[in-house]
Image (cartoon, rainbow over all chains, first blue to last red; front, top):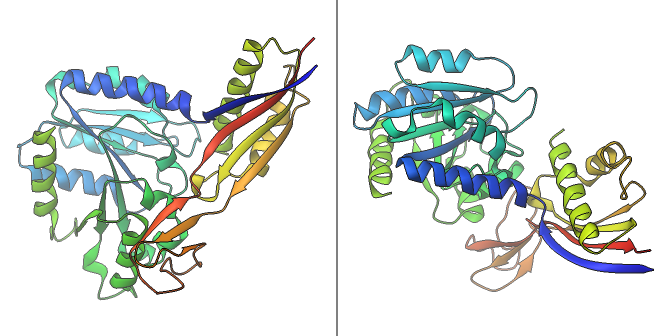
Length: 218
Length: 115
């Protein structure tokens, strides 16, 4: 006998359940966790290291590095003196909640206030996979171009803060900030944004101060 | 390649619901896939043949209902599909708009055969 069964189940619900467990582990340890996403070359690792500098010891920070195959980024973080753990996705283009769950025990969460998870460099799908972090952060760098909200709307929909990075390059690159910001605003109304240059340090303090507020308010 | 875990999840969801209903075969799976969900139905279809082999879902037809992205203007109420290079309201040109549809990614229903 043939029969139709109503299901109505989110295809990512299994991931979301693991994400909830991750969140519970973070909350139990009292640590605030940021899922940082960007395209390859946006300057994620440099931005993390400069954020550490701008925090000036106000928060105890750790890093989880997601990468396709190398541990170069984790080594940079360790060299800067912060606890770091590497997740190699083995070619997968995003982190998911299960991968993050596997990395959590390797960090001394009880001794940290803030963990930044550096997702795989990719603007397509990382935002679709909930990790259980407290905040999704996107870094958009000036040389990528002002059309990125229009080309990768899903990424801009799924974040709670936006860093516009490499603003020191604005004089040299055609980038219509109004066009860019309008696309962002229409996809994600009221999204908090920080224009920064990790190289000159411009804007980094405002970002770090806001981050400290967010972590303390948790 | 990110459709692989998605395809595995679709299979798990379908098999779980089929088992609960005592199915001997899954004949059809209806999937809702939004334009902004960042997944491509052709790729899911490709992985399906490999992943579903040897299960009661191996001959299931995957039926995708694609949901186009839809914006709603907060000023004039127009409901529209945005152009490629702007999301602004085509009727009143307002930038005060909201995404109201197109992010779905769900298994809606399955059709099963029971002995």
